[in-house]
Image 1 (spheres, rainbow, N blue to C red):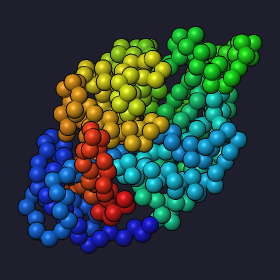
Image 2 (image 1 turned 90 degrees about the vertical axis):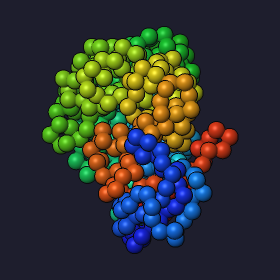
Image 3 (image 1 turned 45 degrees about the vertical axis):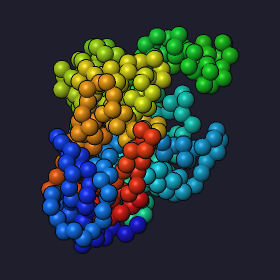
Image 4 (image 1 turned 180 degrees about the vertical axis):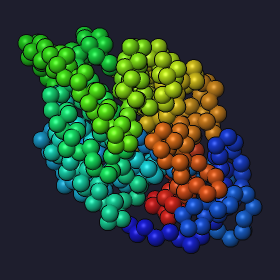
Length: 382
């Protein structure tokens, strides 16, 4: 796709969701940026009273892997996988996305480091060729209990696409799986293990976590600090987890699993990120704290699509229509302005004069926000 901006774009009769209010009016874009809000020329595109919101900013999506590895032992062309992923991202209203790339061999991963680097290369190639609809960056998901995590991180940390790194440990008894019986039930079903094989698997993962997790967390945190890579915790369950994250220089708390961990994260000044599927479903698929409960307690700062791209937009409007007391402007901030600020993008995420014209035109049908048009820097991409 060409990167040239149209000289001017005028959108009339729009219900614009600004940072703090919803107004009916018009908007003019010049050279990819918002130039005027309010009364503009009658010429242009009539949005017929539909919503106009900022383009969504996604910090954590695992969805690229589903296009590259759609079935066990099946691999798709990485360029084709990135194009398919990008099209779905943009059609979900996402104009800036951090694609999650695995670092460290994970027990349930179907994609290893070499393949993750291939995908990162395909993202970079698509960006340079100007054929991607959304703006793509990379989020490194670091499985700190994996023996090869630090070695793998060293191989990818200087990729200029990297903006965020999260430190996670999916070993039994840790974080998301504080209750070991929950871990065993989940992975025995997922990996089709016999009782004996599950016991061996669990013992090995415990030993790996005890051996590697602490040293890998500290080393990767130091490397991120020296390179300006934003650091996120993942699945914090206790105040001790949060305290450890603070000492490492963490700015984002991804998917805290308990209300106590979320409160401690807020007190520490971290932005709290939860998944859109959790919001839409009303509960966590793994039995952890509900994102809606956090929203009701004013402990939710960012919504991520996690594993369903459209869930970001759906979650924002679901919150605004729900009993949690979240206004539409605030709900939209959770998927636009706040994630942009958390990652250091101060040029987008808001309908305001001078900001990038990353915009989404949508209307509500049967309670679902339907994306009609998407612009990135004033250029139509959907």
